[in-house]
Image (cartoon, rainbow, N blue to C red):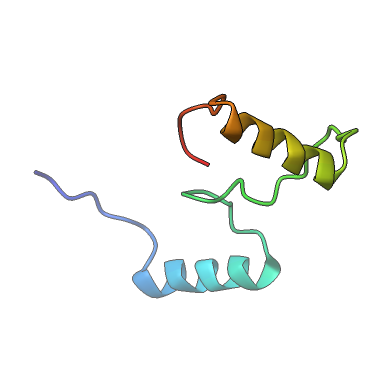
Length: 68
């Protein structure tokens, strides 16, 4: 395994990182990076209507598998 030489020092990389963090220019990557995306479609159902549909589905065995 060969190690590549970098032209940047550890301190320079750290300074770049901290500057990007202060500026808010760090890329959003990793788990949860897409959380907070705004839905583009609006629902035409009220919360009570959605709740009633869920109750009906549970009572009549119409639940879908998977995570909730």
